[in-house]
Image (cartoon, rainbow, N blue to C red):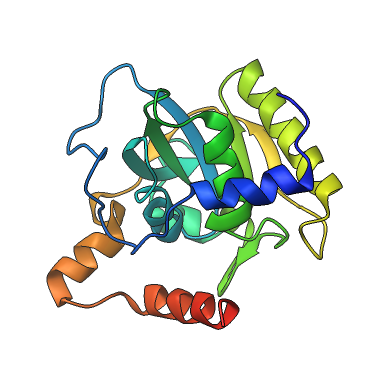
Length: 208
C-alpha cells in the first residue's frame, strides 16, 4: 500500500456517500453471499457501525456479532458485562470489484466512528466497545498497520489513535434482534432511533 498524503486522504472522503442508517438500494443482498471477501471492525455499539457500512457502495451483507474474547458462544448479556474480553463487531461482506479493504478501513477510521476514544463511543463505555480492526490474514494486518501510521502522520485527529489491531479468531453472530437493528426499528416505528437522531444532529452542527 503506497503512502497516502494528507491531501489524498482528505480527498478520499468524497468517495464515501452519506447514509441514512437504513438499508440502501444497490449492492446489498438479503442473504449472505458465498465466497465474498470480508472485513471485521469494532467501534462502539454494533448497531451503529453496521448501519454505517450498509450505505457504502460494494457492501453486500453485514452481520453483527462478538469477537476477541475467551468465553465460547457468548450472549449479549455476557458481553455487556465487559468480562468476556469480546468486542461488539461487524462482519462486512463486500465486492472487491466495487470497493476494497483499504477503502472500507479508511471509511471506518475517518467516518464510521472516533478512533481516538479508548474503550468507548458516545455513551457506551467498556472494553466491549473498543475500537479495533480484526485482521484475517497478513495482507489485512499490513494494510491496517500502514493505514493507522499514515493517518497518524497526516495529523487528522486532535488526539492519538487508540484503535487496536487484533487477529480475527472465533466470530459469534449476535442474536437476531441485533441484526440491522436501526432498520428494523424504523420499519416498526416509522421514525429513526434516538441514537440515529442524535448522530444526525451532531453531523448537522459540524456542517454548519
